[in-house]
Amino acid sequence: MAGDVADREKAGREIAAKVRGLPDVAGLSSGPFGTLSMPVPGGRVEGVVLRDGSVRVGVVARFGRPLPEIAGDVRDAVLEVVPDHRVHVSIEDLVPDPTGMEARPMSMAAPYPA
Image 1: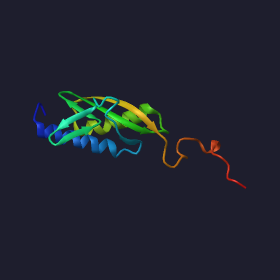
Image 2 (image 1 turned 90 degrees about the vertical axis):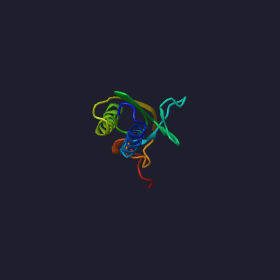
Image 3 (image 1 turned 30 degrees about the horizontal axis):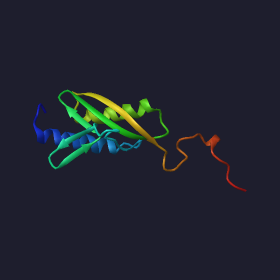
Image 4 (image 1 turned 90 degrees about the horizontal axis):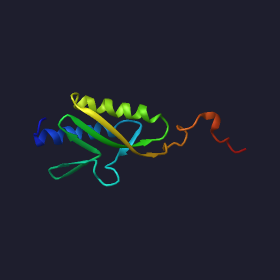
């Protein structure tokens, strides 16, 4: 992958798809200035920067699990695609869990109305 544009594009898109498929990842983020994106023929891969020897990934995480665990899952997903690269994960934002119940213990849930 030392420079072949087609290989980089394929790997970048595969990384993006794997990371988006993680349950605790709501989406990818290119960061506040758009620097976490990879130009490819016909557009950009948002949230992924693939260089020789390293990958940077920006994610929007779902609130609930500890962030280091989510970052570890992202790192593992990236290493499935490019096992010989260093991986830097940036959690750019958090969003609430869509159900609203995952992020808090049941003992703290609001009681049902009578």
